[in-house]
Image (tube, rainbow, N blue to C red; front, side, top):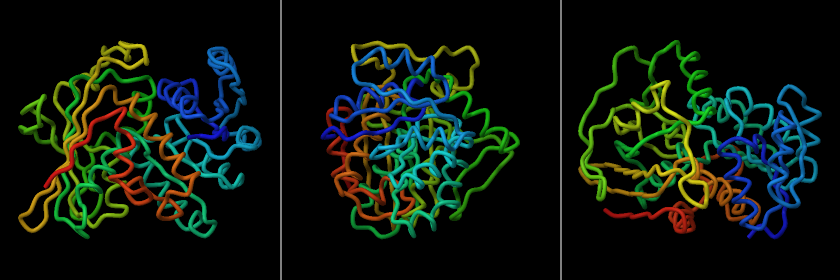
Length: 343
């Protein structure tokens, strides 16, 4: 449990940030609420006792230093991460505390590995990007499925979402990514990111029950193509997304998610089906749950708890599957998702 340790949450008043703050409080941590909008921070602080408000902006390093003063760790929930990740990481390095973010932006995550790998390792710092539904969960499932394999030929991570009501943050991050790619799509093949102009393929994916076989968009590339290859020898990492969810995401008329239960989760359900293949053999890991934004909170908070209690395998910039014991981490998420590992 948190044992009263203080964790700063940058972007605390956002949709995912609110889930993270609630999860921290449930786990016994003390939360510092930070972000650039002081009015929204104060409104969030009024919802619960003992919430410290420290406004900060990524273009004001001194304000970030004040926000992180005395904190044991920071969780960055403020996108687009192309703008926020580097300044908040710099502040965490100055403060000498671990950094965790929930970025789903492929290029932003790649830049975190590239720009901070050597500095973080030299400093003995811990930086964990993409500790979220996209990037973190897929990496943990892939790592767990690999088991004792040291390499594989292919990893397939299929997202079975019954719907996808994107938040404003998701839409903003998507716009930044599209601009950075000049409208191209991206995939991970032959051991590297490839940018393409053609349309992605569609195919049928045999999701396990209760979802069953669904039409998916192939090469619907998410942050897993950064996290998985960062530590696993897999030259082909493919993502798939149900066409219903992809259609929701692309439509400008799809509304934001709304709460459907007492925990604030939406009615969205998901199945993440991971298949790794090597030498004709196949291994699989499956996770089922509710609300992709809500599940990000226990992922990020469990990561912080493990970092602060020394349950890590490395330092520097590391993905979830590299720094944590993946099967054990997934078991710890059992109140929130169900996980099935099998050959």
